[in-house]
Length: 142
Figure 1 (tube, one colour):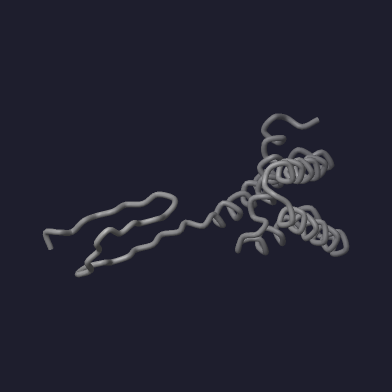
Figure 2 (cartoon, rainbow, N blue to C red):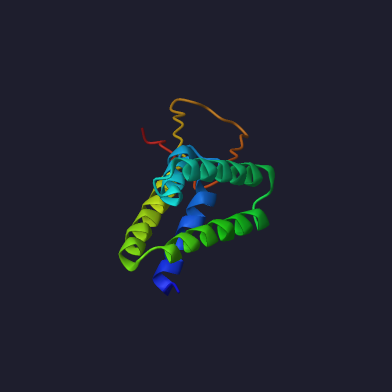
């Protein structure tokens, strides 16, 4: 039986898989998860890589929402099963590796920043469209 901390670690790992799918950190997360679940067995690791690839295909082919929740639960369950197989000392190591997996996935969050310099430009009756956080500075004094 797993304690709440280990269940939370497994949930974090499941969320990391879903979060990383479709991002530039996918390969790193994919390989780390397969190594973790493969436990030094090359055939088992290859099978996990194939499962991860199927997960990515499912997530990319569907809209956000239900598919993400289902896939997070699937991977959480896989990580919970792994944790249950291990002695207590091994569980703590895997929990740490799941936190590392989440950090890899978290690094994939794109932070887009754009800078447009319109110095010396003149606009009459213009509009600006955008999304996200936008800061507009009028430098009329320059």
